[in-house]
Image 1 (cartoon, helix red, strand yellow):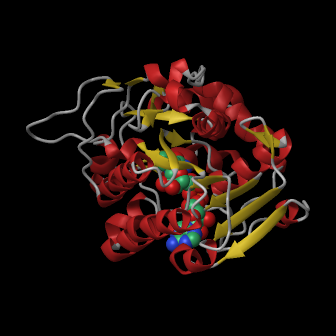
Image 2 (image 1 turned 120 degrees about the horizontal axis):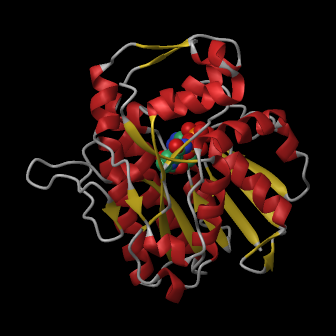
Length: 328
Ligand SMILES: NC(=O)c1ccc[n+]([C@@H]2O[C@H](COP(=O)([O-])OP(=O)(O)OC[C@H]3O[C@@H](n4cnc5c(N)ncnc54)[C@H](O)[C@@H]3O)[C@@H](O)[C@H]2O)c1
């Protein structure tokens, strides 16, 4: 089986690649070739695996060549992230919407109906003045995204659904929660501080939390996020129960409880490296996202949320030996 991961040099793309290589198979078929498409080359430790090939450059420009390749499975993770899309409207449309359409058309032209898994986001949900978010998001909650990123993710979900209905791909979308702890340097995501307030203090650096300790967020560890993407990719059409995107499970936790967990694992002095400095822009974006989910469809696929934030901090410490994505 030949697998493509777009965004294959990013945080989740490199983890997904490692996980697929470790499992050696996907949906009971052996993975013989794994192509990692990204603006940047993947870590050298991944390229050392003979099954791995890098395809480097902007996705939209790679799509003409991709028409001549037949992938059996595709994970579409390449995207500009939330704050980048808010800051640069055209970048978001090009990297997210236009690239996704070009990729879907390349796969359609290839003609072999690959299994296609799209990494969507909890950012498809938001509070509209006439349609406020319910306290708990259920599988049938109407997405009302309130950011360019969220709207682009929702548009792509709909494209994936329609290309599937037409029989061009076998598509499915998984809505990821905010994945913490992200290693390395912060990226352009509005939620970046949720990782920074664990990562930086553990690395001996001071950092700023732009929201109040009472702010609640919906999180998943990298491990749970990988389980979610792979389970959605491997699910049969019947078990997916339709073409609507699957909300992955969330751990609901407040920023204050996250810091308590950090102190419990690493000590009070480490917690004191985080100071609160309100940022109304970040607070508005993050505060507009849902914090609690009841994801029955994901549970039916065997997926559970992380049990607590302490285990997420410990997972980050255990993962520190992994080579970081090479993104500058
Ligand atoms: N990490 C999270 O908390 C989270 C939460 C919800 C959804 N997601 C989604 O999961 C996916 C992966 O997220 P991540 O955290 O690994 O992000 P990331 O920024 O680490 O990785 C994304 C990768 O996509 C690549 N990319 C961006 N635009 C590209 C383009 N035009 N052409 C080719 N490559 C391009 C980047 O170079 C990067 O390596 C994204 O689609 C993101 O929206 C992530």
